[in-house]
Image (cartoon, rainbow, N blue to C red; front, side):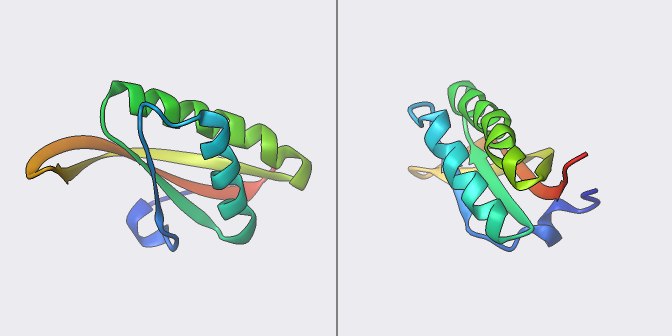
Length: 99
């Protein structure tokens, strides 16, 4: 279980936009989780957060054949975009043994 998401993130951040294809993000997320213990998705805006959540659900199905499941902990983040401070969502994702 993730007790402090920040200390578990050992990969580069995957940034998701409203235009991101959730299947592509899921494939990238699954690839990272096959190699490492944790990953992080960042999204700003309702559309981007929607795509990120869909990607997490799709990644679970991609990882099922590898006997890997995942746990996801959301948190708020502040991101600077074009000089403006925006609030976004960070999804700290950690792999775990499938049930």
